[in-house]
Length: 144
Ligand SMILES: CC(C)(COP(=O)(O)OP(=O)(O)OC[C@H]1O[C@@H](n2cnc3c(N)ncnc32)[C@H](O)[C@@H]1OP(=O)(O)O)[C@@H](O)C(=O)NCCC(=O)NCCS
Image 1 (cartoon, rainbow, N blue to C red):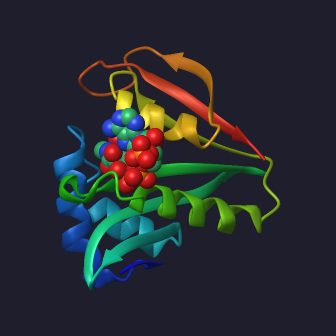
Image 2 (cartoon, rainbow, N blue to C red):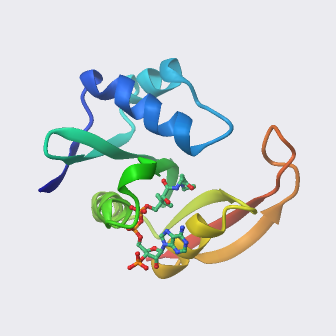
Image 3 (tube, rainbow, N blue to C red):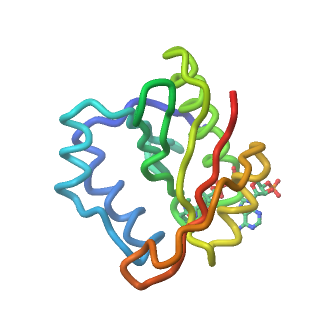
């Protein structure tokens, strides 16, 4: 059975593994710990006591939420863990009276782009050369 729960420091290793298999550019384990320490929203998806995905989010500006990172273990994708993580994050952010949520997605990451489109995220703009490898980012937003 899949559950969504708050991140705890014991999850760090698994979250880092999932990030590593999911992105070329890594935040790194220390950044995850710092994000947790400063109190960003941090949830994990767990399937039978095994962490299979995570989401990190915060309120970037007054009334604007931001998805910092979201990833699901390759072996557990298309099972709605991403949907459940993002839905819960949106639900929590909405308690803080925000108007919109935004995020950056690599312009070559068609899967994630489709995933966010399903949530009604729209394209705001493209930022050329946003990532270390010079890939561009699509900035997407969800009006609430
Ligand atoms: C994007 C990601 C988080 C989606 O997580 P997930 O748990 O596999 O997604 P879900 O099962 O909730 O998918 C919901 C819907 O989104 C769409 N979707 C998800 N992945 C997709 C893909 N690779 N290609 C096309 N559509 C996709 C589908 O419509 C899917 O519904 P369906 O499976 O019934 O067709 C996951 O693919 C991932 O970790 N990718 C690598 C990291 C990443 O890109 N993170 C986001 C960058 S900001």
